[in-house]
Amino acid sequence: MKIRTKIILAVLLLLAVCTGLLLLIWSQYQPPEIVGAQLEAKSEYESLESVTERWFQQWSQQHQGWKVPPSQRIKTASITSLEVLEPEMIEIHYTTAISGWNKEVVSNLELSSTDEENCYQGQWVLQWRQKDGVWTLLASMSPVQYQLQSKEFWQETQIPQTEHYAANLEEECSYLVQDETLYVTYDYGEHLTEVPDGYQLVCSTPNDQYDEYLPSTSYLVTPELTAFVGYSDGSALLLYSTDAGASWQQSPIYTEGAFRANTFFSQTDSICYATFALDRTGGSDYYGTFRSSDLQHWERIELPNGFISNLSCCSWTDDNTGFYSSGAQYYMTTDGGASYQLYDLPQDEELIASLGFNPYDSLEQVYLADGKIYFVLGQGEDGDYAKDGNLLKARFVSDDGIHFSFVEEFTDAPTPAG
Image 1 (tube, rainbow, N blue to C red):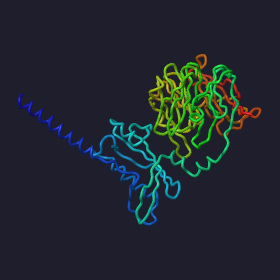
Image 2: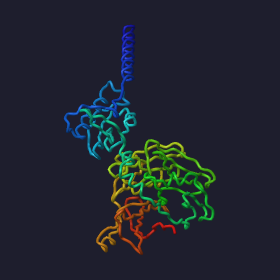
Image 3: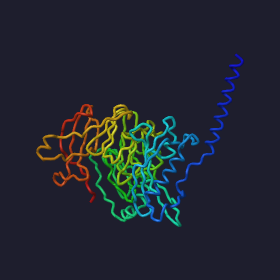
């Protein structure tokens, strides 16, 4: 018995020593540099693609192996695409596999999930400079950061006007913008309550302009909760009031890169959901959803395929049921985002037969009324099916969110001010 005890103690001591050595090795690990990395040029005419591939191979290898702490370790990595944006700028997309037991590396390397377990994707825009036979990596940024400083971005900022819209006072509770100030009303416009910093936070766009039209799916105005998603310095926040505008609070939602594109806000019985763009690559916006039960602590939830691009609609009708749509299809979850099913948007076969085409190919709104689920479909950016100069929309109704019946066509275009 004594010998057995000694053996156990010896094994435990050995494990402690090995663990200590491993922790010591991990503490001395230095992640491979990105900005400042240098490689000797293979030739005077080596391409950006070639030097980027060579650097990426070195970078990924330095993140592999037992000597790398789990918070930085990957198993494999491979480039999926390279695109030269301008003479010294290149955009790189890659996928990487990680060990499933440690997710800290996902945050540290700014990875995003895919539909494959433990497989993630990353992306950069890199700026290289070759001098005296040496390539030097001068800058690294996300694609959205590159977009914001690109020549096209600065050209867009020269577009001068902000379009103004007349207030919609047919609803008891709504918002309106006057003289670069955001207001809310709870009595058809008889009394206006200013939203502090609302115009700057809610109406500003990434190109330093202002968009005063807020889709009904992007905010909530009720005496119990008035809420707008706002943006400031690459962060998203909730600007809200729980006392009919008597006082206002700001709650940070996401501080690691967000900007105003299509924005969506939903409230269920116990949870609020905010969905907004986190990145922009190749002209596409990529979205994330965050939820909170107290408006102070926000949790990011899984979306189909990790990210969804170019959302036209996002809505949660209860704590378990959510809808996401991009293009002519939509995802539906009935288990709080644990899983999603993909469906085609509903169609009106009689209308298609009479017109010879289907004009309604973009989901714009989902809402509950009298226990039924309603879809509002629009025509997307290329729509031209109009009545009295206004584009038509279609309303469909469903009992289960899957099988729909056509209800009506209608128009609800915002009215320009003046």
